[in-house]
Image 1 (cartoon, rainbow, N blue to C red):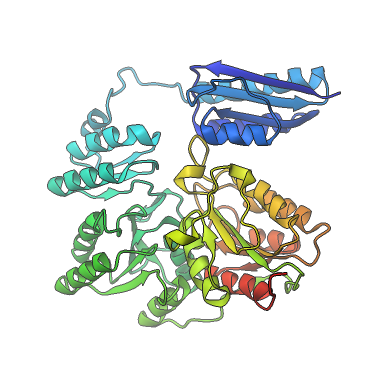
Image 2: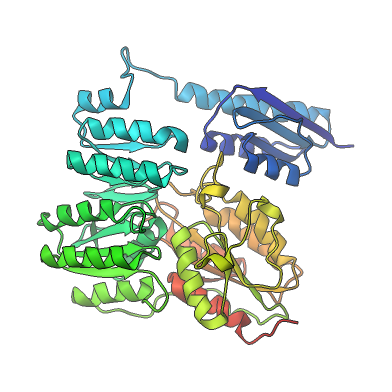
Length: 496
């Protein structure tokens, strides 16, 4: 008889990475069948209920929830001990302090004359910390998501007045003078600088350039909304001006999610006035994909493009007709919808290319796209409240993979894996078995993976590709090529 334990620790807070590690630690204890240690946000409550746990009424975002299902009482005791050990270890590891620690971000920056700050706190508190950094005269990378557009505009206007740069909010990737911040790939130094209103788009571009033999000097992330009409390219303008004065930058690439045309046009005029060499990799209907942009850059610098590598078996054509894309990276999801949409037609999503294609995924694992093609960005704000980003903790995506694989309407599943500092230390070790389980009993299902990474990334690019191919997936370095392959697997099928 199994034992179930649900405990609510009111007023106890731990960050999402700590809780993810605690969950993994307790899940590895012998006799523990299911485990989740999480803050009681609506998303996490939904996930816990989806796992079959019954929660008391009134659980809120400031409550820590410890939920375990075990084989017996001994395993329950061992599991709870593992939870406490994991949480205590992390607290002790972060409790070391100096004799007189700075009490604010601004004091710390002024004390150390730092030109750059990184803000990574829950979104509702990010504006105050970032404003403090700007007031101290520092540029700031705002890793936090769930910051409002109005706050972003106010922050970037304040930064412009101080002549500093704001990267973000929701900026997950930057490379400044060869130093990676957030999710950053290991790249050789080179003549290209990237201005990116796109985290995983910038990583895809860096990876393609690295495999093409082109190095990167800077990658300045802007936050995914910077080239929207509401934000107006405020940080992009500052970044282009700064790079025009940088003697080490020979060519700039501007990469973004689908952007406002008027904002892009204004930036093009600015680049011309600055006499700045720029390649534009701004995604949108009818516009080139990121792989095409990388090829243009390589050729412009005198290199030669080649066929981008792929690994793994040819994928079958199954009776299923629907394509599902399950992504950790928002821009990779956007690009895949644009590429596959040209072959298949409309694709529904939680980050839709048009409002009529919106897919409600607020029910976490319980949404259903029916017989339609659908792609979901698990890194979207609505799916990361109180949880680590899926590039760190892909468990929600992996659970969804099993659901889609069991759906006879689904003929192909497209996944992304993004390597680099900050990302999961060995994503193929988790996704490989998940793919094998998905294909067990669904041998006619096509599984295609877009693998973004460089040969120098800490996870071992070749090893990751080999493990995913061994699991039965077809693996592509080019995200656009992966999207085409997945779409081709279902293109000729008609809905039953």
